[in-house]
Amino acid sequence: MFISAIKTGVLITVFVMITAVFFPNAQAEEQTSGQAIEVLGTAAITGKDVAKARELAIANALTASVARIVAEHLPKEILIKEFKQLNEKIFGHTDQYVDNYKVLTEALGGKMYRVMVQATVATPKIHGKLSDLKLLNKPTDLPKILILLSRSEPAAESKSDESAVDTQLSEHFVTDLIAGQFAEKNMKVIGADELAKMAKPEDSETPAVLTDADAVKFGQRMQADIVITGKYSALLAPNTMGADVRSFKSVVNLRALRTDSGTMIASSEQAKVTVSDDENAGRKKALTDASVLAGKILAAQIVSAWTDDSSQFDTSPAKTVEIVVEGTGSLSNFVMFRRVLSELPGVEEIKIKEMQADEAAITVRFQGDGKKLADSLMMKSYETFGIDIFEVTPQKIKVELIPG
Image (cartoon, rainbow, N blue to C red; front, side):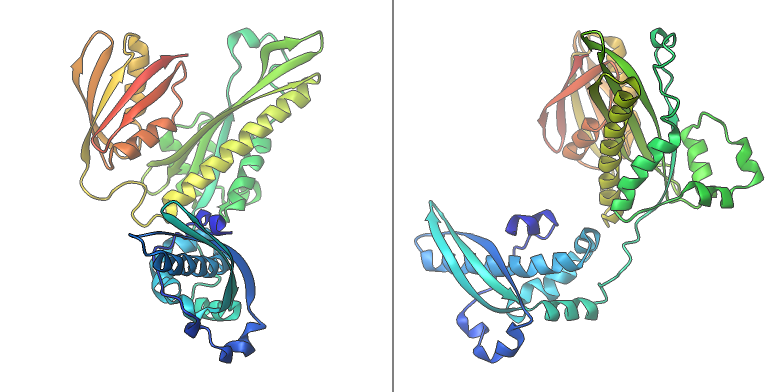
């Protein structure tokens, strides 16, 4: 349960000195409406003061129990956005929201003291406080999504196989799978019916193959905050087993663009392979698995970027990050790497500092540090090669291009 509280983003560092005097029997009338929770509390032992560590471990456990109830009342997005206020008004006053507690077990391990505590948390009090703070049923202000997908053309050698792409696996099928992942995050997705109602004559002139600018412009007309563009494929893979069992591969590539700026704030490319003796079922299963995973990852990225008040990148002036790239002997791979790098959100300028036989040094003006830039590079697909990032500091990244 303590781990669950941490997963919801509620990591408490406020230590409250807890003693029995905080929980007098006069509160007995309210205990019946409390909720009993078992939580783990941990504290480091300073010097030889084991008693102090025990008190802090109990305090941590009680704070975690209160955090658990708060997390049950609020969406994660509100917890993150309002954490400072919650810390000041609730987490810093644990004694007001715990009716009583008892230590179930405790243990000393090295320099750490751990306790398992059963706390009775005054749920109605927490609910009332959250209501006073106007946090209950507060809209999360999550973006409105428009999904625009297209199917990748099969490779030339596959076009002769009429069943290489199942025509029943349409854009609507994939869009619905991905939209379901956004719905789980409480984001509204513009559906076909709403699109039909909002359509204007000029929308019939929208090109079949959309550029980012086309997609953003169309998303603006549809009053979307973010437009999702991407491609998918569901092809027969080369692996076989016997006469009937075959393998099928699906790749789903998604990009999220803000309609107010055209900036890409998230991306996800996922591939799945399945095995089946039924071609339609095999392709459908691979496409379903890849679409759901790509949508789930993209939705999480969008929520994180959208609810982060400081945005995905620093708002401070761009910093210089040096990237040392090994494995540049294949010039085409190095050119592709630079192109992908230049398209990352937050990248303002790229300069080649030094070129050697199989290594290059690049300086990048970036709205963030080396860790954020490395994370962004890890999210990308490089088609014919992969990357191995083996050193990351705030000012420098070392990466190797690995041929596919």
